[in-house]
Amino acid sequence: MNIISQVKSKIDNWLKNPEVHQSLKKTKWGTKVLIASVSITAIVLGIRTLGGLQTWEIATFDLLVNLRPDEPEDPRVLVVGYTEQDIEKLKSDQISDGQLAEVIQKLEESEAKVIGIDIFRDIAIGEGHQTLQQVFQSSNESNKIVVPCQMNDGKDDRGIKPPEVFNSEELQEAVAIVNVLPDQDGVLRRGLLISSPPENDKIKQENKHLCSNPEKTLSSFAFLLGTSYFPESVEIKQPEQDSKTFKYTQFLQIGKAIFKPLEPDSGGYQNLQTSDYQILLNYRSRGKASKEISVSDILTNNFKREDIKDKVVLVGYTALSRKDVFPTPYQKQAMMPGVHIHAQIVSQIISAGEGERPATIDYFPEWGEWLWILGWSIVGGLLSYPKIKSSLVFASVFITAGGLFVICWGGILFAYWLPLIPALIVFLGTSATIYGVERINIKEVDWDLIREEENKKQEQAEKIIRRRILTQLMEKAGELKGELDKLDRVDREIIPIDHNLDILLQIDSHESAPIHLTPQFNKVNKENWLASLCQKCQKIQESWLDVSVNPVEQKKASIRKLVQESEKLRASFKVNN
Image (cartoon, rainbow, N blue to C red; front, side):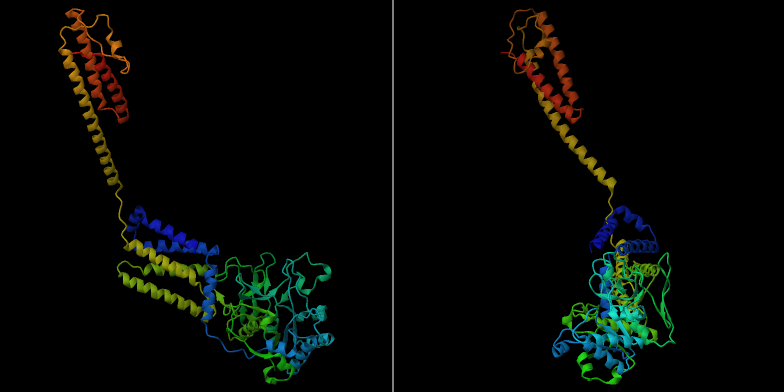
């Protein structure tokens, strides 16, 4: 969400740039659509590759799966469940070895095609342990039973070993792993078909077993049951893998059905861990994929023989209190028992092998997804043609977006996962971008005009400052003129001939005192003094005039100096009338 908001903000800022807007106006409309489509598609694909859209895409996948109509129960599959009612009737939350042996015998007598026991029996439970081992061995001889084990997780879990009778090499073909592959949110959307246990040095030698041996390649519980249903006339091709690249050179094939394994970037997934042979689950329905009979009904013979004959029968716990339950795309809150999930996968395998349903939910290769997303981006740009009314553009975009959703829903109906979220984002993004470029007028900024106006304002400010300075100069000039007029009226007073006028003018204003002129000298000395005084006054007047053409800072300094000199002049030559 944050990533998309940042991208949108950058696009908006880019469009608001006046220079970009002007260049876009000169570009042909078709070129604009292509540039915008490629750019937005590249951004969205980058975000998608980093996993930024995976949560949304997975949630959309769940929504589309929920909108599919449920298919009827598979008549070839049956679940024998240990229910809550069985717990009450049999007074135990676990089925004992003796009861499990009796159930298997009754199913064999009813000619079940193959029996899968989704109940761990690595240790004895209740009475009848020896009887159960004998039943396991006899059922295995007739190739009618599959027992579970659990692989270790490569960390602290050492897994769960199969029943002890299946530890021999001759009986190991009937052992299958029941590990599941939940996504990060815990939902089961993927199914495991074939795998090898991870290496784990923490497992002690005495605790090692078949399902902790990394050298073994094991089939999953549902896969082994599903393939056991088919007659020998149906060809089953096992997958082949390149020893160097670890890529599959041949996919698993049952009859004409090819089970395409998931890759790290399959569908809406990004950076998926796919070291095992796993597929997308194509659930049959949101409920049970097959009919269910309780263990109590089997023990009391409360069933019909035709409900079991020639069917794949799975025996397991269906009581929710056993907590052998998992969330599915249909039921994130209401969990589905594990044995029913195995039944869903068995039904998917059998239906695909007999050509009734797709083998798995398919998806585009990576390059196909790029073209699909780019195509919808171009469509979004084309719908924003500038000569079409805005109301029609909005209506066409809304209707086309709805059409995209319907197409993706139709893809899920036919077991094809189409990228809805990235296609919708680029479709709306390109449409909005082209619409904004073509129809929203961004005011052009005339930078030359702005600079011209700023220069005018600066000139006006300079004129105001000059006027004020000239006014002050005129006032000072008037004061100096008044002083000179007073000096012109002096007729008898003279200063001593040896008085130094330069020294007198340099006296600081705060130290100077009025000098009283006395009639001690002749008229010639007076005229010489007045001539010198006039030269000094003329010099000060010229300095005042020079101030008006100097920069502002220099004007301030010069004015201060001239004011001081003017004050000195007034103080030094004050005439006492």
